[in-house]
Length: 113
Image (cartoon, rainbow, N blue to C red; front, side, top):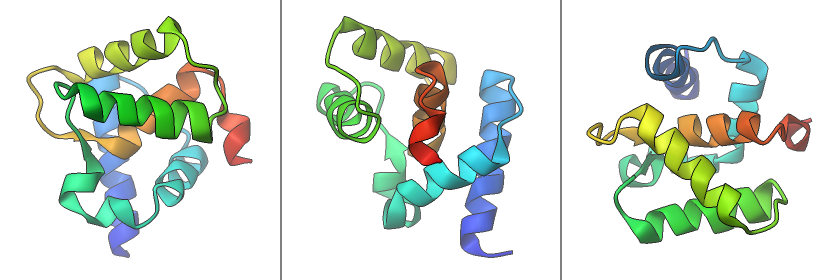
């Protein structure tokens, strides 16, 4: 398996253990690919749930620019919900997992078609 395949398997395991869901592997692969080389950089591959600037980046760069959503309180609420479910004490919140959960939350899977 390639390094990317190993990471996708790790993301799928996180989705199963932290969110109790079995991911759509095709969508998970597309979200992973969409993150580009950031998945290989430890700092860029993680999201700090306690850093307001980091959460603003998720909102602006992913939810608004990538998924095409309009800014509003529901975006912040969705991010907070995913971070909370992931576990606020868990420092290793994987960006791909968060993006996957937000994509499915807003029913924006079509962005990756």
